[in-house]
Length: 154
Image (cartoon, rainbow, N blue to C red; front, side, top):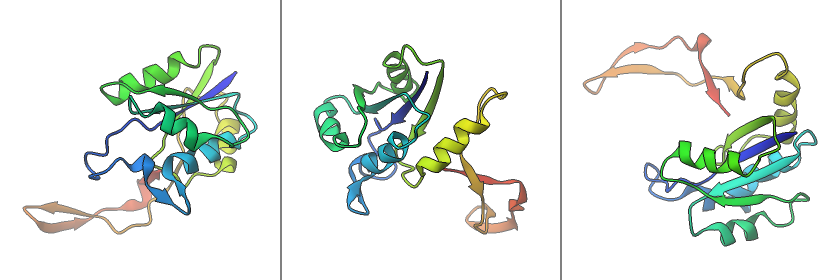
């Protein structure tokens, strides 16, 4: 059995708001991420981990995706939240963990990742880094970073 944890328990401290509830393209970031996972035919179970006290809100957001999405409360830290998600997927030998704040994945990318996983200990979705990157010291640009060996997580 293959399961997926949608990690969405963050408070959004760096962003200044809880990103999972922001609207993107007419749906919340949480729902958009969940839709991609729910649409993958290779996944058996899906659980969303959300801030404690927000479970009912999440269930309402995730209704109608064509698949049941379990919802559990997150923990004090990300590792605790993922652990809570794992506990909700007891029959799964393989588990994906996806950050809901990365809502631009597609069900095809999830499918391709699962197809590529056999024979490997783990994997992650990534795309080549196309941004121009610089190292900075004391607020001054110092050197251009060679991006050929860099990827960005999806």
